[in-house]
Length: 88
Image 1 (cartoon, rainbow, N blue to C red):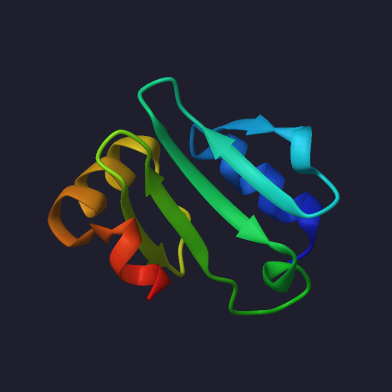
Image 2: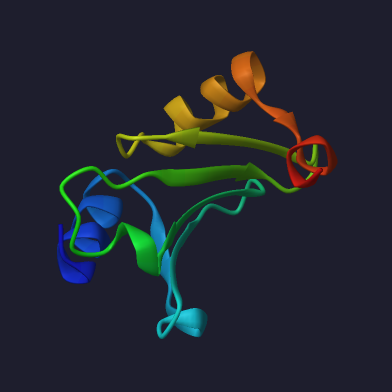
C-alpha cells in the first residue's frame, strides 16, 4: 500500500489527515482525542499495521485494518493497553 493509498483510506474511514509530520508519519485525527498513525514502515507493504491512540486515556492498540474513528474508540476501550506499558 502506498502512502497515498493509506491517506485515501484514512480519509474514507472518516479520519482527518494531519500532514504536519508528512515526511515520517501519516496521522489521522479526531477532535475527540483519538488518532491513528502509520509509520514509514507501513508504506509499500502488503500488510501494514496502524497504531490507534487515545490521548486522554493514554491507550494504544495496533491493528492491521483501518477502522472508523467510532470503531477505533471501541477497540481502544476493549483492547487498548496503557501507553507506558507498551514502551517497556
